[in-house]
Amino acid sequence: MAHKEYGFGGLLCLDMETEERANRLMDMLQNHSQFGYMAVSLGYYETLMSCSGSSTSSELNSEEKALAGISPGLIRMSIGYIGTLDQKWSQFEKAISRFQDSGLFK
Image (cartoon, rainbow, N blue to C red; front, side, top):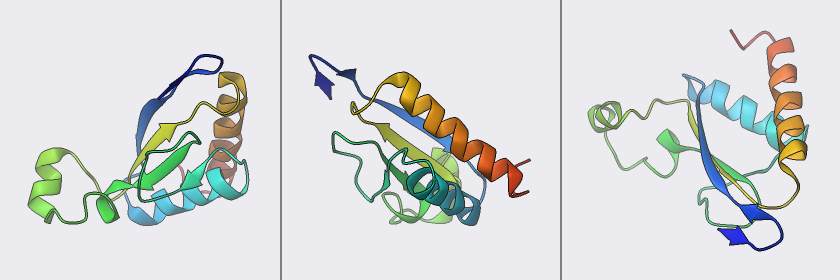
């Protein structure tokens, strides 16, 4: 997506290794830092995120997911064009810091 005044959106992937860790980080990104929203589809102007192994790629079996590089904790984020890059990065860092403080991030 592109907006003349805001720029372009983009995709970011982060592998949290397990679905539990992925869901916990997405919860922090959504509810504690207002980074974006958990969703099953990534098509929207707001920032959306999804744990691909249990949502958009759930029809694949374990072997197919492994061949495609989709771990149970793979988070795909579609970065929207609402807010500035500095705002998004600050929100992301806030959630990562909170996640690290929880002891679940190595």
